[in-house]
Length: 108
Image 1 (cartoon, one colour):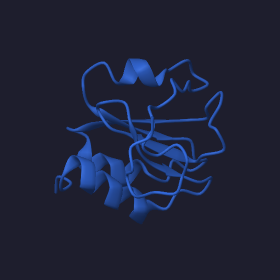
Image 2: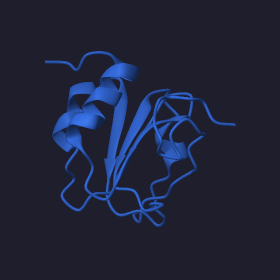
Image 3: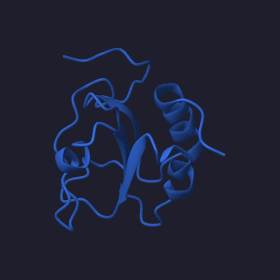
Image 4: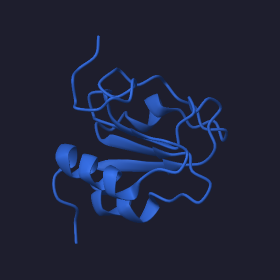
């Protein structure tokens, strides 16, 4: 099943796979507290600064993944549905728009 969330990226709108970071962290474990999750697989952790604006509403985890599906980052809603996915060099502005849509305005 796929929800139409306005993206052509095939993973967006689908249940997130239980992605594993190389350090052993699993997406499923990160979601246990009911918050969304931003997974940043990019080399420079390029979404870190942006994600901190929503740290009370989403977790941020970064690092190489065992299987990143060719993506640079993934934003997962609390219900486990992928809200946004970025390529190898994730677009910070696109991430911030998606985070704002699903998690409200960032803290200042």
